[in-house]
Length: 53
Image 1 (cartoon, rainbow, N blue to C red):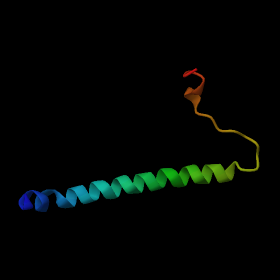
Image 2 (tube, helix red, strand yellow; image 1 turned 45 degrees about the vertical axis):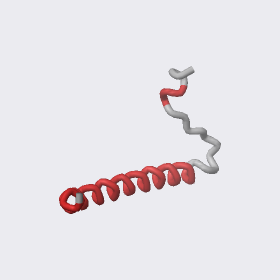
Image 3 (cartoon, rainbow, N blue to C red; image 1 turned 90 degrees about the horizontal axis):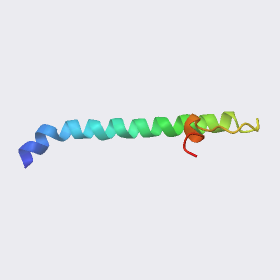
């Protein structure tokens, strides 16, 4: 078990690191978009919204 962790530990660490960075980037872009459109009165909707109804 220790050999497997030693072999794959760095890969798992980078996998979690990349996942965390992607999540932070997505939340940052959403927050930036919300702040940019805050005072305009425009409501952002996904394009597929009317397809799901």
